[in-house]
Length: 322
Image (cartoon, rainbow, N blue to C red; front, side, top):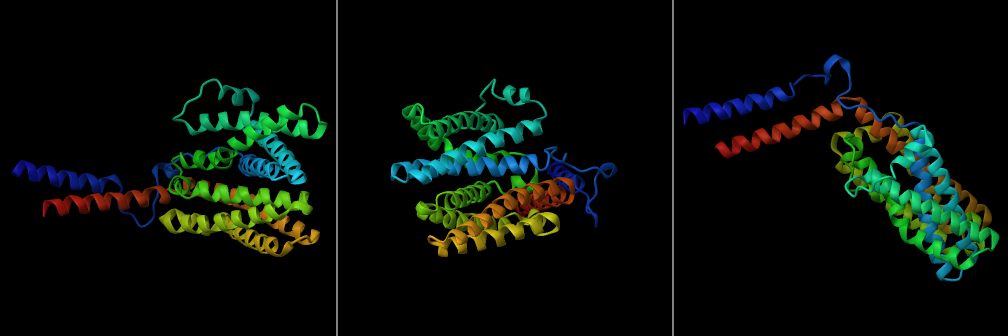
């Protein structure tokens, strides 16, 4: 019994030593606990926005084609192709060399979000490009439509895989939001695709306006839910540069959704709504990206949650003893 008591006391002292209680959280030699992501700005935020917009636009094009809205389908296909191709360009620029992107395609690892994401982005870009080329030239219409259908089927994964990619890292501001972040990105993608449809095909913009409103509601609701659940990491989403950008994103998205509701066939209102929604979608991606980097820079976002978990473990051990 005495040995057992000494063992329990040792475990309690070990818990206390893991993270010493200090008034100000620091780290060894003043270095961050986590290595800050080396991804470049604006390359990665642009990649996040364009990929999501391209995926949702491809879905919009497929649904428009099925319901006989040719102008809206054309706008969606062109937006999907341009967005996906430009997204790949930003990703390759961030990687530094095109061969690094091609190297990610050598093997498909289902357990790696980066590998799966690469295998979503590469075929989607090719299919969206083929569908757009057929749309513009009128050549090979049946293969072009088939490419558009397959791209539309892949599109939901295209709109959300970047959120999974961020959430799979150890960065607290991204990892702790793993449940809601895919919904934030999906809503933002749908609203940005709706913005494209309202501006590019005003005569057939009814479905695009409904997409814009629905996507905005989903994005705002998921963002609010995520921040309420993040704990300490939510501070990075509300303060500093990330906080300012995200407040701008929410305001632009809300205004854009409101304008979309009343736009009707008004060209000016549609353009204003599309502009606000696009600004909101871009700002959302940049704000989330910057908030995550802030939680990697400051040891407090890593250390204090660890303290809480250690305290909960200690309380559980003491409860079992009693």
